[in-house]
Length: 189
Image (cartoon, rainbow, N blue to C red; front, top):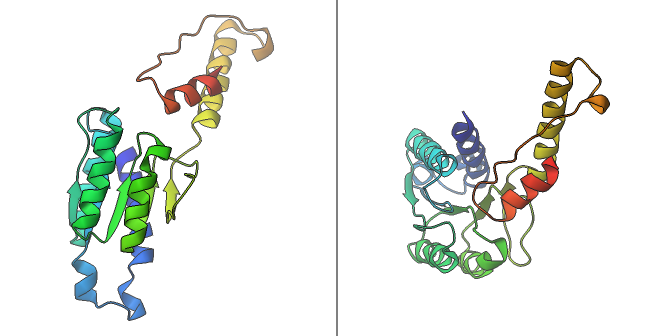
């Protein structure tokens, strides 16, 4: 399942950052971690799956988890405020799926100033300022281009012709307008 994949990747990165075997922290301190996960919102099945997977992994490691999300996938200020709030709570790491990466610079600065490692999920384009431990994401454009090639292959197989000779109509369901939708649409076209 997709949410497990993302949660496992996140847990692996946290394990690298917070290893008890280095002697820097005890095994007990390692177990007493609080991780914050801040998705766009939890209205889409994708983000619900991410939060469910993060909860599952936190439980597995014995970590506390704080999940906060704006009510709308357009609430930029609300999302930054949530990051600043969990920084003030003194969490051990933050994973955020920024609504708009450039709007998250203030939150990244706050986490950096507090020495809290920050991850960006569902994003591979570096933000302009601040230190991010890892970007966890995928190539929206390239993935959609591969999907389009697959669809063209299906049309060609159905028509019994080479891909270059196939014809047909394909409809693109756009979803929620924004950066990712634009990248997927552009890649598919």
